[in-house]
Length: 248
Image 1 (cartoon, rainbow, N blue to C red):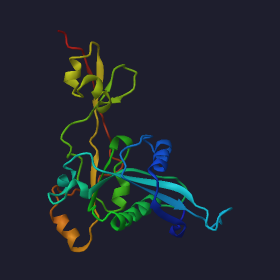
Image 2 (tube, rainbow, N blue to C red):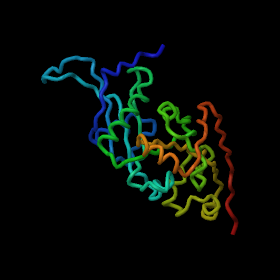
Image 3 (cartoon, rainbow, N blue to C red):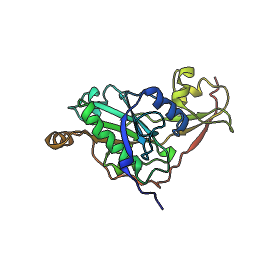
Image 4 (cartoon, one colour):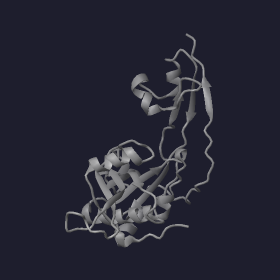
């Protein structure tokens, strides 16, 4: 049975990015840090008085990180009326278990209000969920993001394995070594068989922070159509291909 979510014991405020980084690297499933412009922490207090100070004891139980989008045309990819500086990307979200049902959704919605108050120039948010990690975007669906499918990134993404029982390496990781992540071009450089698999494309979600007439106006100008939410139990099949070296 899910534990009741008592929001009176929760609060959200900005935290130092180093604190957010430490929590993400230790507890987030990726164990990787990334770009971060705004880090917001979720605090829990059970009402216990601090041992030394005239204040309530608090525990940091969650973190959300927003970063500047990498692509310089990210804003325009949402709407021609948006500049890149008016969009943030949700890049990391982590909350410890055991503090109540739907706590991630509540935390996320509170950060929307924080951004409206403290970063009013930001009009929209963008985020991606990775089906390879079993993520269809349930948290975005629960907080009413707009789903724009998984076909908006132009290039296919590949992972590589250079030993049959070795680990998969993403194309971005090997790019510095081969100056490419195109399987055919790497095939020209490698003198032994290797394996490739096409990574499933990430689901793209957009959230409009504006309200009222401004929101309706931006919604009308969205560049891409809205699709029904994907299901969390969609099967992901990744075909694996073995490539032989090209004889000169």
